[in-house]
Amino acid sequence: MAEHVTDEDVRAAALQYVRKISGFRAPAAHNAEAFDRAVEEVAAATAALLDSLVVRGRTG
Image 1 (cartoon, helix red, strand yellow):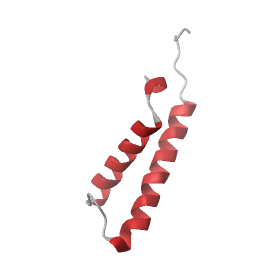
Image 2 (image 1 turned 60 degrees about the vertical axis):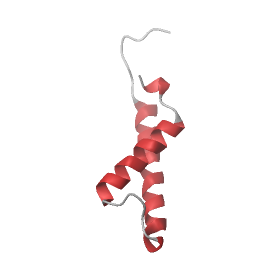
Image 3 (image 1 turned 90 degrees about the horizontal axis):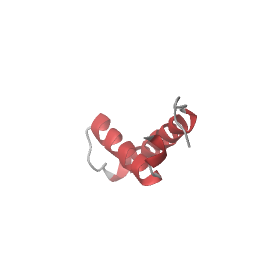
Image 4 (image 1 turned 120 degrees about the vertical axis):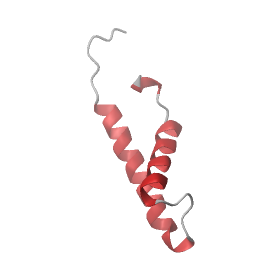
């Protein structure tokens, strides 16, 4: 589960989310900074979520 998620997986999911929600596969130059910042913020929030999850009953 979550222990198998890499930083690359998190960033790819964040990029997919931002593309979906913004409607842009690649932003225009004037939107690139906002787009990239959103990807980084979504990735950070996702990593924080994964770091805080507790899975009960897991051994080892």
